[in-house]
Length: 194
Image 1 (cartoon, rainbow, N blue to C red):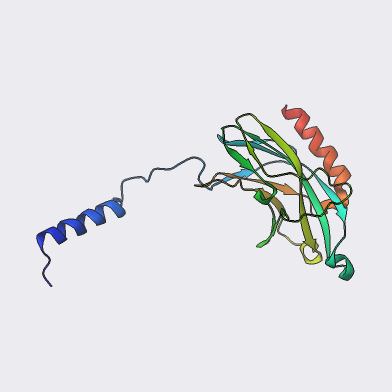
Image 2 (cartoon, rainbow, N blue to C red):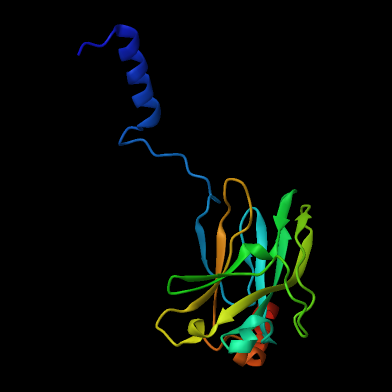
């Protein structure tokens, strides 16, 4: 099959645009969906878009259908987000609890009002240097609490077109059962930082 000259030129141009040369490095952005790394509980995680801190984990008790079967409990994560640029959106759905391939998303629609886990974080568009704090609720199944070699990690992945770095905070396996000791350690860590 013989190609015409215009078709050949267009094909060559397409290959040049979509297939970078082996020696050429692709342009990289600092905050495109990459992991920022593990951050100690109570410490600030920073990048050019935001500051994030997981302050504590609280037990909220069992309610709803899961309480009838004894299969789930409610755990809340209290966190703070500070925007570094205008038009930064913060919402509880940005938080996940992960362990061994299992991902628990924070409940952000019809979240129950549970004693000891207030105020719930409300979705908010932040201006530069504006801060918001509150609880994100997780419905934790009993299978998630089984001791494994995989750590439990709370992941903050902000809602942002084009992506933003995510922050990961390892938390103790006891989750809410050791909340008091965990809060004390986190408080000491945050006082050292700021």
